[in-house]
Image 1 (tube, rainbow, N blue to C red):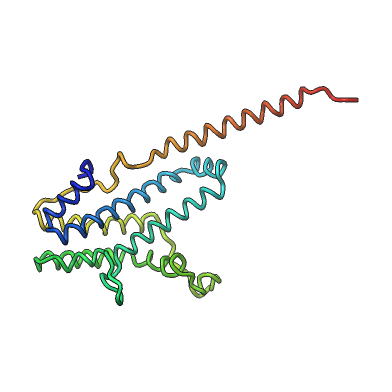
Image 2 (cartoon, one colour):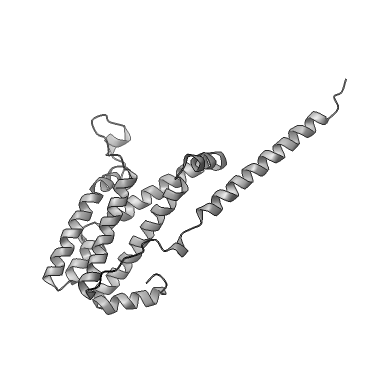
Length: 225
């Protein structure tokens, strides 16, 4: 699937599920890939103390903010995926929206169970969305000691991503009878973090060299009596 064009992939999902469910599945499938890629990228960027030190030296606050923005984006995307299909007058394209177009009651029940599991995994992340990302909760903003958000660990995000992916994978298996191993992070689509780190380190090294040459030239200048 990862080597198909967007249109080919959309057509394949519509062929498997029918036009209505297939179109929903296609959009959600792309959302899940996107959140996987963002998470994989930010994890790789800060995976070692050496890399974190390099980022701090090269960009300081910029890379701190980049990390915060990407993590918040992952939280927002995962939260949206497990929102209700309808909230008041607002219709949402979420995993729950798939249920209305699943005609097989047995498969529908399986997908409902998996969505509930995904919602449980994502519930702590949604607290962050509600209290500090989408809204600015007063008690959180003022660091009320009686109200603290549950810390987000890498493992909790990994489990949430796995639970969301399982919903989509089970739906494909239920409709085709074939179990597929989904590559949620296409290798060819992931930004090359090694290149970024190389250029940052190379730039810092050249800057240090120029600084050394500058200081050496000043030391060689004759002093005036």
